[in-house]
Amino acid sequence: MSSNRSSADDHESAPLPEDFAEAFASTRQRLGRLGTSTTYFPVVGSTNDVAATLALRSANEGAIVIAEAQTAGRGRRGREWFSPPGSGLYVSVVLRPRQSLGGGGDRATKLLTLAAGVALVEAVETATGLAVDLKWPNDLYVARRKLAGILAEATGGADEPMVLGYGINVGATAFPPELRNRATSLESELGRPVDRALLLVESLASLARRYDDLLERRFDAILDAWRARSPGSTGARVTWKTGATPPGTATGLTAGIDDDGALLVVVGDRIERIVAGEVTWL
Image (tube, rainbow, N blue to C red; front, side, top):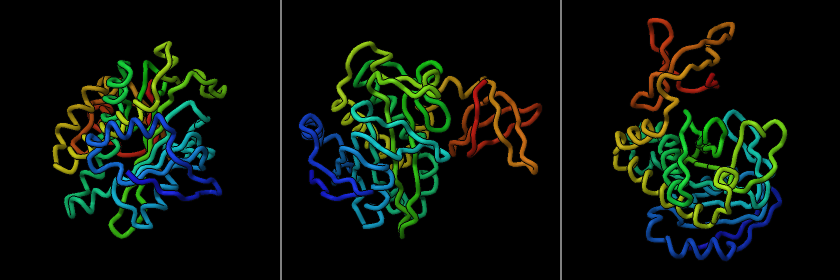
């Protein structure tokens, strides 16, 4: 495994911490196409931004960016992702599903976030034993508190590489007031320390396995696993903003996801198909 020495947002990369390097070495055979290169930052603006720059510079699929802390981490819809040093895992990976699948890459790209969600749930359970639920489209929850988030972004390059970023709250850190009742961490839930290096390599190994499912067109395996991990995707009351003019809100009961990963919601005598936007569970 090589290490790219580079800088981003005036932050300098550094060698992998010893525990991370040892964990990578012991897990290399399970990483598959991931880990063609790794870049580690003690602090960086956003791992997704660094990975996107690498992708546009023709970085190989599987290039990984890891940060100890982010100053401009973000989630869906531009929200800030709280990323203090030593308290979480902040990781981004360069993927090229369209290049690998040619014209058949559209569905794989649509299901990438769901596949990553399944992978992270499996990794958390393997590394810590904690049972975690998925919430459409890209969050890991324990009860009603968010544990991890996923952000997949297209870079706009020639073969449309994707950057898949994820953040997992690990340490029992003090969350900002606006997050205290909505976020949690592994150590808070377990009441004991968590091995971040083990969690890191398990998350990447699990992601590699589920990404292979996408590339081998084992879409049903991903969808079935996601549905089994997401109790709130069926029979839960939700509200969301509609695309009507003027904008409004609608309320209904979740009815699962379709084969492209869209959330289905029963509203009166019809089923609405939600592919994006903000959905609130009531």
